[in-house]
Image 1 (tube, rainbow, N blue to C red):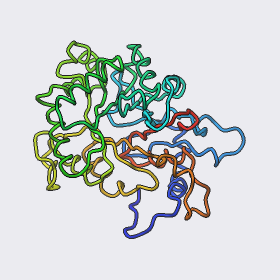
Image 2 (cartoon, helix red, strand yellow):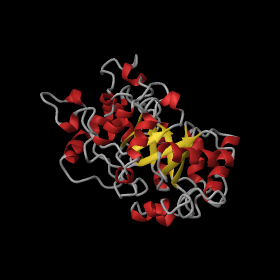
Image 3 (cartoon, rainbow, N blue to C red):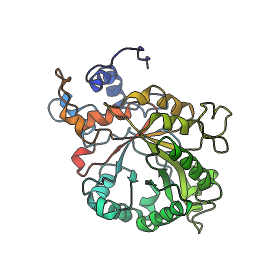
Image 4 (cartoon, rainbow, N blue to C red):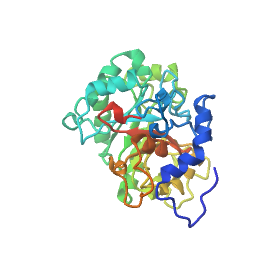
Length: 354
């Protein structure tokens, strides 16, 4: 992909520019082979660009089968790849249990993120996840991610992991995120918490069991007492701060916190397995340093706030020559960088799940 000229300004409607550059490749990919790593994954064309009866791939609420994550960490324990659009809980609107089951059964969504375990905020979202997890076969095809903002206490972390397992009715978690890590003392606390979870805390599954994406991981998680070393397959952090994200990507499992910018050069594995980062049409600067760093360390990025809480769909005063983007446009934009493997949606209706 050609580098963007330094000092140049992005067009007022960035998604329109990207769509024009990639339209021919996207259309060819939709009928071709599955995409490979380091090549843009095919994106469903916007329904507003088509006429007549729309194909399944062009309907905003449908997920073409080619839209899969390519990073080996984003595999369920049955070995299935995670879909490139995930569904997260939304504390601002009520989500029904049926939304979760329908997203999985009819739309192929298998990445789910539970921001918290507050039923008063989440409606039936957690109930829907629990129903899916009740079937062992279905559970093996899911990638369940959870998280907490209370990571300064090891006791609180252990208690939250146990509570997640009980509430969702599962004996392992595919990913556990330390949420909204901020610069300053928060960073140090996050690094300490991650190392504790991998070490003394015994909460992370043995790497040889969690990385294969198959029966070994499932057997490990169900061996009793949370598995061989713990019930969590992968660890991650979420942050709005790009500098924090960079330092987390530079951190090492037994090294420093990465403040010098030189950590991670020794070849040791990164402290985080996954990174959640804000990325949308209004917040694009992650493309400059954060995403290249994630690719260099082979850390998949989960992009959140793809529609900027719906505000992008209302347009912008400078977007005078183009209509506002649709949800599908926003999600495709957020999914476009190679570093982004999953674009997270927190919708409460399926017509807003592209």
